[in-house]
Length: 221
Ligand SMILES: *[C@@H]1O[C@H](CO)[C@@H](O)[C@H](O)[C@H]1NC(C)=O
Ligand SMILES: *[C@@H]1O[C@H](CO)[C@@H](O)[C@H](O)[C@H]1NC(C)=O
Ligand SMILES: [Cu+2]
Figure 1: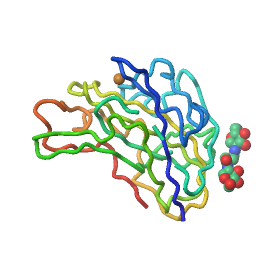
Figure 2 (figure 1 turned 45 degrees about the horizontal axis):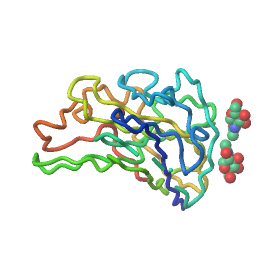
Figure 3 (figure 1 turned 135 degrees about the vertical axis):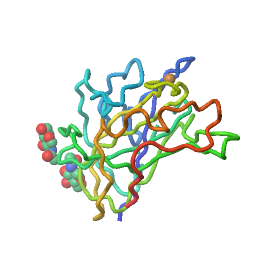
Figure 4 (figure 1 turned 90 degrees about the horizontal axis):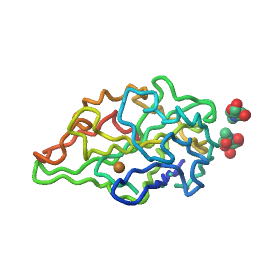
């Protein structure tokens, strides 16, 4: 049985332009088990969902990281500064240090969506979170994985390309796993066109009556 959870750490510049990164997992040092992203200084988002950088955002750093062995009971952590929604994808790989994450290999393990009530109000439970943690499915097979956290900031998403994606890829080695078959599997980039109702959306007016989380269903084992 696997009762691991993963905690994603997040770092942000304070001030008016509140951008952020996800540099750490499980309270480990920044960029040790997470591939250092191009925006480690600027914290600028990715806005092109079809770009190669939409996968792990490492085209300039060329970074890989160390692989963290995740024991039962451990957590993945992360402060988010914009209204939006969160997705965590994983890909099973032979070697997390060398895997490029290409192909239909990604499945979703966690999400935090919006809360709607038919048009009177909309709220964003992931906004201002200082720490994101979630439990890995107990059926997740033992082995090495890339873990890609993605926060989609939607404050400027009313025009195509306006949604801001804050993302990074961690490397983990899961022990004590199960015998599930994670899916559905998607490619990243490829998973989104940018025209999804949860990505191309005016969150302010009129207040959306419903919200459709982008991407495949969460695999819970
Ligand atoms: C993964 O790849 C790295 C870099 O080539 C290599 O040093 C390491 O031994 C490999 N690890 C495993 C578990 O295959
Ligand atoms: C993954 O964990 C197993 C069990 O502890 C260990 O034997 C293996 O070397 C680890 N692999 C990596 C890449 O850390
Ligand atoms: Cu920002």
